[in-house]
Length: 68
Image (tube, rainbow, N blue to C red; front, side):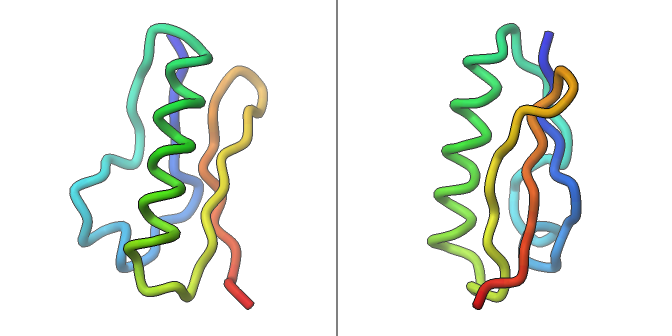
């Protein structure tokens, strides 16, 4: 099992239907889901932040950075 975790949760994330942590059978499945989440959040959220997925110590972490 591989975990996808959202490192920091902005207001847009907290108001979304996304979960801060979820489990997947494989690393590939977790990375794919995290990348799709990042694309959606980068397109649909308020654009104050930029999201990217990284594989760190056996987990996929979605990191948030200030945009701009």
